[in-house]
Length: 227
Image 1 (spheres, rainbow, N blue to C red):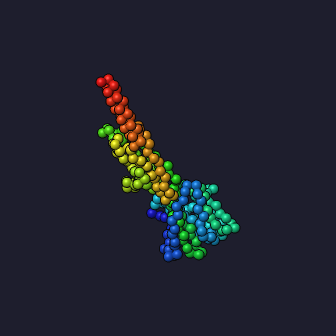
Image 2: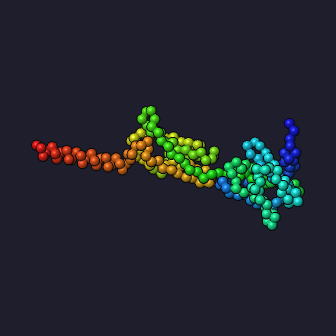
Image 3: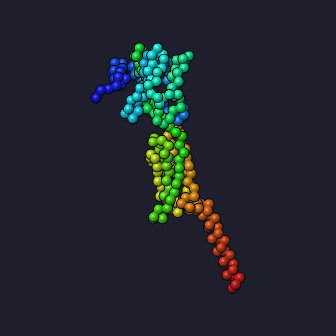
């Protein structure tokens, strides 16, 4: 299979002076920008490696940047005073490794950009056939999100990707159940309420007990008054 010239050039650069290649990982929120800390090389390339695919984003010659990928129109900004280059308005699809390569200075700087969204965990509930309440904690913002359940502010389920399920009986709904989703940007929570339409909790059961006691006292007084 014949490799494109820019792919072949990149491989030769890595082979020839890969010892001068460095890599750094950066976590960013959707909409943020990333500025390469190195000054723009006089001659070189910017490549994007993502999901086993490599694309040539831009070529640099005499400090002039020429885009080779139309999807980066308006996203690549060059500051001729600071001699810096910035990728603006990052989206989830922009995640991956960006290689800034200098032909003259013979270096490669790799930056692994992990772009995430803030998470809004969701709690849903439904009655199962065996009469239990199925509580589902889920997040579908990022593939890398982890969700887990907390009971009375203490984690009691292992972190899993995408979703986490609890099966509760009526006797168990008096506790406070919190769905929490987490990624490198932080963690967010949503509390379970109105569990399967069961309104009972510790407070309501107490009120029910009071009602039962009062009813029993009234019934006893009525019985004594009639006898």
